[in-house]
Image (cartoon, rainbow, N blue to C red):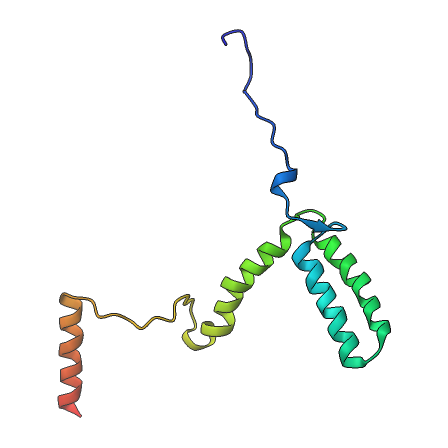
Length: 124
């Protein structure tokens, strides 16, 4: 051990860490492409719209060229940040990730708020 120089490195096989793909596109994105092309064909009643699958597949391939998990990251962004922007930012003008009702806190703050409410009720 004393004669070895440098850092011990364990090689990582990248294959098991990548998502399953169909022609270079993650399986979920490929199914979504097929669904979009099939819906376009059904709405227009024209079989030629199934050809939409090829350009959609090429676009998804370019998206996942550098990062095979790009669609997973996009899905997480949609679930968190985008959902926050759509659902609560317009109402609160701030980030709010939980729709739970505010819970009364015990202690001084609760007493202060109770006294303030009572004072407002007596004034009106």
